[in-house]
Image (cartoon, rainbow, N blue to C red; front, top):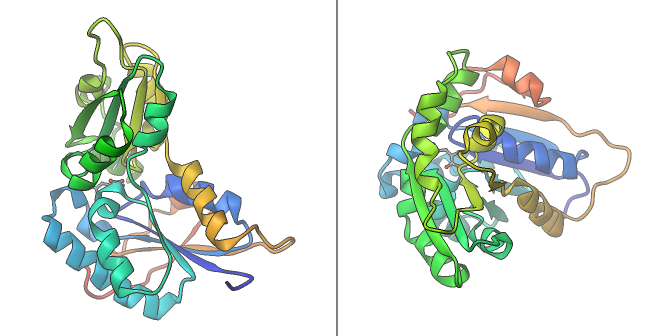
Length: 265
Ligand code: DGL
């Protein structure tokens, strides 16, 4: 593995920044390309075959242009369906982001866990298999949110934040009380940690929200090894829409780059 790796972090929008920040903190010496296929947002709305074809097509070009040493698919909606196709076609190591059902069930005291993801993610066979394999004696409630990721994108693009009522309506089914209460909620969409303070404030009772980003950063370290001392890596971002949300990217220490990528419309 190269001493100063290039790591590509891929999402349908800005949610992958929650994964990027953990991976960048773990490997500050690496060079990063943050790639947002925001022309295709929301991936929740794409049919599975169309999504696989789109993401594999984008990687054809991304690998040719950026020669990454590793790619992080910082999107549950994409990871839960595209990883086999990506791994089959490209020799690159891919680290996926999939619902953190195993650690959530290990941590739950009440044995009531909810998985809050896009409608597509909670419907996927991949997610169902994680429950079969790892939920053990836990009761798992799958909650498909239609709007939450869109609320995050809209607010970060400068729009008005979603109201408390709008957010409450999306998260309400996570909170089950049948004598025992849900105590653990998996954030199974990388956009949701960007709303974490509001999710905490609007919860009807306190729960442990599980963000997979630290575990993803650990997996990247397992594959690439520890950082090289005294080298500061570079970070830039590419958006398939051609937009460059400078204010948000600056918050995350990334430079926006107006690069056109064909095959993404
Ligand atoms: N960040 C994606 C995820 O983790 C966003 C969802 C979408 O594009 O619909 O699932």
